[in-house]
Image (cartoon, rainbow over all chains, first blue to last red):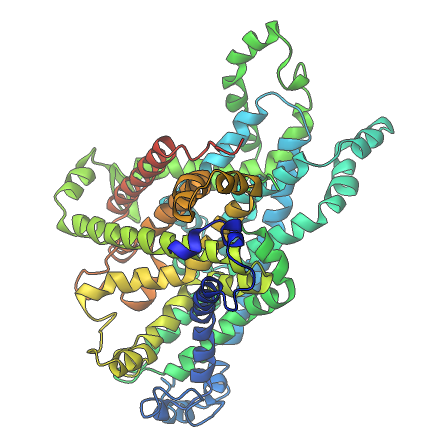
Length: 308
Length: 320
C-alpha cells in the first residue's frame, strides 16, 4: 500500500536511468490480478457449459472443457428429449428458455422505452421550465430514491393482485413504466447544462413547448438518452425480486427467475452443472453483447454526478 | 386519472408560504407568478402518476399495513402496535438483523478497501478504458448470475476454488454449507460483483483532484504516505461517503444471491432481513408482519444514511 499511495510525481525524484521500476511492476501485477479475478469466472462458466456432466468430477481442475459437448446448450433451449437430458445429467423437466428470453426482452424493452421517455419529459419540466414549487416537487422525486424497493414491493404486489394483473406482462412492467427517480435526475443534469439560445429563438418564432421538447431538446440529448437507456435496460434485465413476486407462471417468467427455477429443478445428488452454466451464459449474453458494442459509453457513465 | 393529476396541488401550495417573503426581494429563480405551471403539469403528469401510484401511496399503505393483521384473503384488521411488539420478541428477527449486519460490515471493509486500492492503482499505472471495462464486467451481471457462477466455482466437491485450496494443503471449505462460512461467502460474491464498480466511482473522484494539489504537497516535502492520508483521502471524502452510503444501503437489502443459493440456510445462517420479510409476507401470507419488518428495515436505512451524511459531511467538498 505504501508504494502505491504515493502521488504521481513522487517517483520523479528517483534517477531516471533506474532499469526496473519495482513499484510500477507491483502495481501492474496487482491490477492484472484484479482483472483476472473479474474475468476468469466467465471463462469457467463457458468451459463448464461445454463440458459433459459425467466428466466434470474427474476433471474438476482441467482448464479445457471436460469431454467437449454441446448438450448443455441443447438442454437449455429444449432441443433434447427428456431421456437424452437425463442421460447427460439433466433433470429432464422441460424448461422454456426461449419464452423466458422473450419475456426478459419485453420486460426490459418496454420499461426502458417508457421510463426513459416519461422521465425525460419530467426532467424537462424540472430544468427548462420555470414554475412555482418546482424544486420542492423535484426533491420529492429524489427522496423516493431512498425508499428501499422491498418496502414498496409489498403494497405494489397487492395493487397488482387487486387489479388482477398477477402473472401478466402488464403487471410486471407497470411499476417501472412511468419514471425512475434516477432517470429524472440523470436527464435533468444534462438539460440544465444545455444552451438556452436555440430554445429561445424557437420560442420567439412562437413554437410551443412540446415542439421545443421533441424537435430541439430530445435530438440534442440523444447521447445521454442512449446512455440512460443502456443503463436502464441492463438494470431491468438483471431485476429479480419484483419478477419473482409477480411473474411466476411459465408465460410471464423472465430469465433471472427462470434461472432460479432451473437450479431448483436439478436432480438431488448431482446437479446439472453444465446445463446450469449454459443457462447462465445464455442469460448473460444480451448484456455481454451490449457491453461489447457500447463498452466505452457504459464505462464512462460510471462516476457521473452531473458535474461533468 | 383526474384525481391523480390534481395531486401535485397540495405540494405546490405547501411551498407558497416562503414565497411571500421572497416577493419582497427579487423574485426567486428570476421569475414571477405561476410561470410555466400549466405546461409543466403536462410534462410531469406521467412521472407524477408513477410517483403517486407506485411510491407515495404504497409507502403510506405499507405503514398502514404494518399496524394490521392481513393474510391476503379478507381485509386487513387493525391491531395497533402488536406486530412491532411481536418483532421485538422474535428471535428470528434479531437473528436476521445480526446476520445482515455481519454481511454489511464484511462488505464495507472488503469492498471499500479493495476498491480504493484498485482506484489508486488505476490512477497511477493504467487509465485505459479496457482495464476499467474488465473490472466493471461483474457488475453488469445479474445478482442471480453472480450467485450461480460462484455457487458452482465454490462447490464443496468439484468446485475449482476448493480444488485450488486443496493444492495449497488446506482443508476444503464448505462455503455455502457451513453456518460459519455462509455469510462471508455471500459477502464475497457481492464484493466480487461490486468491487470494480466501486473502484470506478473512486477513480472518478481521484481524477477530479487537480495535479497542482499534489505538486504543492511535493514541494512542501510531503512523503508519499502522508500525502495519501492528509491530502488524497480527505479530498476523496465526498466520493467515499457516497460509496459508503450506497454500499451500506445496498448490502442491507441483500436478497437475490441468498434466495438463489442458500435460501436462508444452513439453519438460519443466511436468513437476512429482506429474505425473512419475503418469507413472512409471501410464504406465510403474513402481510401485516412482513410490512412491519419492512418499516423497520426502512427506518434502519434512513438512520444509517442520515448518520453517514451528517457526520461524514458527504454533501460538501473540500475541493474549492
